[in-house]
Length: 447
Image (cartoon, rainbow, N blue to C red):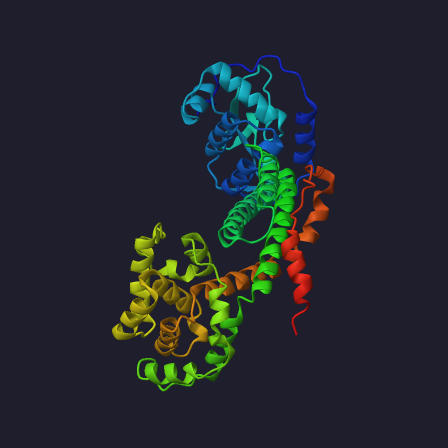
């Protein structure tokens, strides 16, 4: 059989340090090394930027590997392929000869292949009388075996960096969303604070987020946003404590612990009468001091996210009409009878009753009889002693407390950002109004 000869000569080429390094690695390669060529190629693709390889160069490397008949590459085997330029262009999805030569040089410079030049600069293989290849000239792909471990480490590092970058972007998104919601809640509820300055501080930090940025820069901005998040949360918590919004919720907790119904539906009327005789939560003064405005839908959904499970197709709840429809679905799943639901809507109003259903559904694991619980709240609403505000704000507070625990490890990660440089931190901080401070001093610590 005549040896295959490429019609395109190599020409004169300079020997680079990258080529020498690859040749040294190939010589020191263990003879018993074995790799899966396509697994190594996948690692090379992921570490492409770190290696300095171009996209077109990797297309050519893919073609070169396809000319080796075996999937497994062994350190003690012949790893030279000798395709012609025309064959390479065909398998590399077509490119000009000049482009092919340029990206072949890139593969060599990156140390991914080694040139094995023949005396006349052509690529071919010389076979013996027995048909075995005695000498081959072309491209040596032994670096694929020799540097397989290195390529794997580089690929893992790239994957880890991509994951860290994705996580910090998620932190930014969640933090931005929560701050906006808390600012809206503070303004809607009339919490005494300089909310204009809070919004300005938020916009200052958010305005520093570039369109594309390294992970270290985003980490620094996320830390600033989380600091602002903590300050806004502290102001809201102080307001909740001074208004004693959890008075009704604490009564609810006692009701949950003391309720021992026989069944959900049969105990509705009995539990309503028992709860009606209980203590301080029925004090109408607390209800009169609550805001008269309707709760914003965003705050209700943030406090009662479990209701979103009932929305078909996962499209979310966009308005009060869709919220009422979701509450209609939640009602029978809680075991609340149609009569109890109708009484609640008559006493509270349809929207307030739906919010009550959402809050009960959010905490259904702690309520033994949702029907009895709803009837009790309905009776209190008839007497003007019930509002959905304390119930929803208690759920918001619980979520904030859970988030505080989840973010307790942020300080440890901040040390890693020192070398990347800190983004300028805004010096503007939240200010509690003099009226709220005097109110706190006047009330003193709660016994």
